[in-house]
Image (cartoon, rainbow, N blue to C red; front, side, top):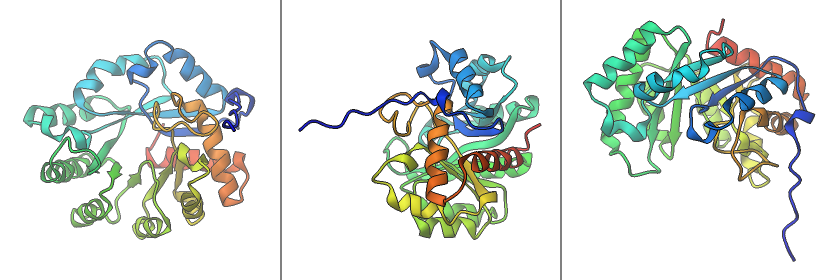
Length: 274
């Protein structure tokens, strides 16, 4: 017996009110090289009023920020990804700080943190890089966006030891359980939920998100990765957040439109958007 065919629902048929915000996208990725303008237009059509684009190092930022010069509803986050720690030197950090001093569309330092899944960068270098960027965020008075993969204990320990217990922190791409939610909420941090909330096997994630206070919840794509059902396995894009938020609302027993606007307001507050 073959697998049941997935019906690819057009997200433009499921718009939500203007005011949603995709809190984590990589629209400068080459996956969007051919149709970026159309991707941004579709995002606006489903009700997204802003997109937060994440640049993974200062060089990429300088090379690619011009892609969005006319899209004033796209804001920026910049940091050095933990897997790129071996490439970071004094000049990299100087360029990172300079970028924040000269571009007011840069709203947070990120995605920074720890990634123990890939062997690309030794853990001790990741930990040093993480701490140094946290210190820079404090110097710049900017919030931080955290990348944490298979490194929860060290990530939490670093944030706490660096005095970020009561700082503006966003835990990006949350895929944990109820226990992790409680540890993050102890510090009043924000939590962003991606497309995998829609996957049938993620019952523990759907249970965990019920415990997140409405004022601490955001949603994201992490596009071009992690497309939600029914577009799983394809290139993700911001307009697919309508599926993510519907699944999130169902898990929480809430109205999708209200949750969409609440998460958007949270993102606007966290990133101090204009």
